[in-house]
Image 1 (cartoon, one colour):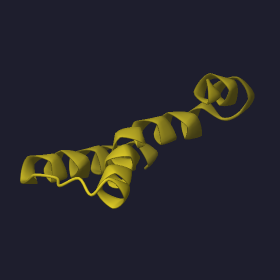
Image 2 (cartoon, rainbow, N blue to C red; image 1 turned 90 degrees about the horizontal axis):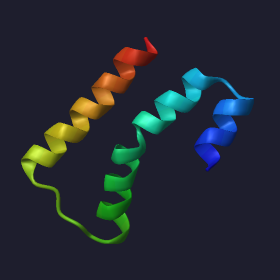
Image 3 (cartoon, helix red, strand yellow; image 1 turned 180 degrees about the vertical axis):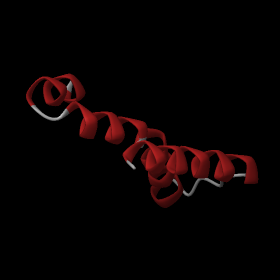
Image 4 (cartoon, one colour; image 1 turned 180 degrees about the horizontal axis):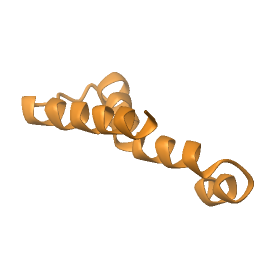
Length: 58
């Protein structure tokens, strides 16, 4: 809901970047609060998400 509201009112570029980081934030919150363990493949995948987002921003 907030995604569509901000996309309507704000800069769609910023909204898209924040939306792309959603899986990264979710995984980090799960590690911190739920004490989830990430396997190596998941860490690599999160790194790819982060690097892809950085490339889009540049």
